[in-house]
Length: 437
Image (cartoon, rainbow, N blue to C red):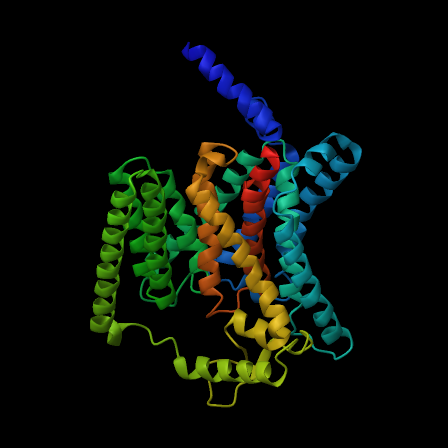
């Protein structure tokens, strides 16, 4: 009887989602190809350039800052050649049309930024524009396309995240060795601490969950940067929220479910108050974050937006400003705004900003579906990796509020590449409804 039930469940799943079932059924016989390994090597170079654990400032050296493109290009070329020569995957692509609205939004935003930046470069002669922001946004659809073309996309996603994790450990080790010195992963906290959340979601027991949170907290503490502390708190909140939503869903009785959420809100409020009290006690010993500099540059960006609120400058302006409030510890007084959202608002107006924010609204909607119905995903073991990718994106969203990561080649690639890797295997409400129809 049990054998019959299990066989029927497998048959029903195969009929409901033939593509996903084919991937799962053939996973043991499908291995990563040479093209996949070329891609992983390229990703290794991309993340190394982005995390820059040895503080070589690889992303700021004109001659080599785009080297990761060279390293990863053979993988895309081979995948394209394979797609042309072997047309058998085209039916697979037509059936896998979920996430198209997000891909279109990403592409429209990228084109908007790129066209304005090209005008700035070749007509106005501005070299330090937003061309990197525009072109590297296309990393998301390109990565999604490549992963979907893989013989084993789930294993490829795992490989990508273990590359992130490896360089995160190297960056933490370097920070421990040079503790007390300049942050060895400042502006990259989302990549380092974000990659660590994978061990929490892969953990199976309360003890290993506790160990994972302790490791994340230790990584944030050795960084000695406010952004690192913020990402650590975001991680704890993320864990708590995922647990709460999934546990609350299991409670069938409405009264008991409301009681659970009342307790959860009270606990959350208590923890938030505790964090606020601790912050007030240690505030004087925390890094200041140079608010005078930041607020001045923020004001410049805000005034640009007010002068043209609909489309801004159309991304035809420079990505830096002449800083004249006071002399800073730099070889030049020409510095960035240090806030990607404000740059997008100033340069793209409401059009550019709404396109950009729409990306995260769509992602958030899909995240709720992942949390509430993880069983609808491609396979159970991919869910921890999906959460890790989501946290890399959400924490990157926080970091880019205070640092210009989307106009830096390595940091932009790792951010948008995470979005693409997520979309390649993420099942969304739209895809599930399409299968039912």
